[in-house]
Amino acid sequence: MSQDDVINNDFYKFLSKHNKNEIPNGCILIVDDDYDQLILFEAMLKKCGFDVVTANSATEAVEVLMSGEKITLVITDVMMPQIDGESLIRAIRSSEKYEDLPIIALTAGCIEAQEWTKRDDGPDMFCLK
Figure 1 (cartoon, one colour):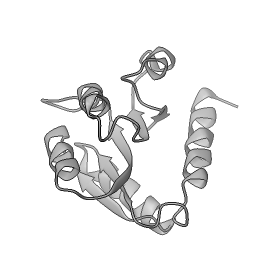
Figure 2 (tube, rainbow, N blue to C red; figure 1 turned 90 degrees about the vertical axis):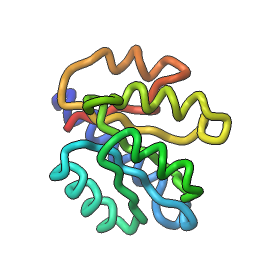
Figure 3 (tube, rainbow, N blue to C red; figure 1 turned 180 degrees about the horizontal axis):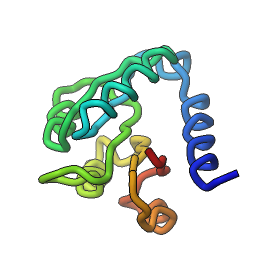
């Protein structure tokens, strides 16, 4: 089994723990500057019964969070223009309201994922795309 399989299996396990029945009043915020990736994740999660909100930038994601929408999980790309996913995650973690919000970071590249998830300002898990 490859590292990709382990990470993707963890992603599905994470989603199975947080199914629609457990979070009926919330939705998942997906953040990605790649429109195709955004649509792919949105379709996959909606098929699993989740309510989904999308944002194509970190700025839009912050606007969604500030709008009062009940977000129960954030899935964000790491490498985005202007404000990257790491900065977005730090901003979310620094907010008292959202410091415990589950966050999954998506990455196409190899970064020091294990170290970052150990930090207080890091995501809960990584998923390779």
